Length: 261
Image: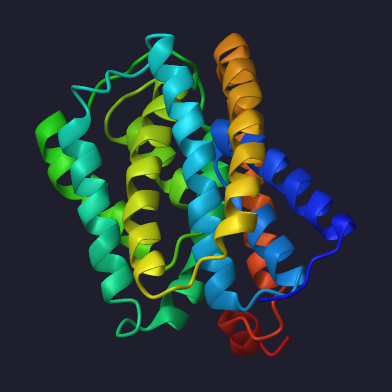
């Protein structure tokens, strides 16, 4: 593990706070924390495992904030949370077998498509709409599939949950955000347990960042509940675009290699 100066520790704490703030509203906190952990000198696998640890505090904090204010029924959502957890465990177990480059190739266009959906869809607000899937079918199919994705790869999981809740379950934007945090927390737990089992977690720095994430998520969730779709919608669009650009910025990204950039 790298030796960290005080400046690097403070940078990691600030990154975690900002990630918790953004993630509690629109998802995509890993866009900030994973590169910062890599910059601090952690190996990629340890950076991912440590990110899962500190991310638990942010998603857990946001989930509690939304639940305490009546935006999500924790008891009623336990079956879906369990399926998200199981999906993430299976995804992490099969991560070494699946063709990761296919996921990396498909993700930037998918994120841009999600951004366009939320940017251009009319009457996208906090009012619930007609369901396109029953809650039972949604929980049995969509939830574990996205949880599986979170375990095997990860970036954009919150955006995919948001799209599914709004487009298929008929939730308003604020309600979708609240339920996204619960299921994202569950899938984070599943992925984290696998990383912890193989020793790919820097516990001290992960717990410190977790405390900062917790605080950032409380602030972000409070603003989201106060402003609803007016804040969540533009931040979600910006986060999806930023995450797509961040992924395409990698020199070895398969989409860049495909088009010869």
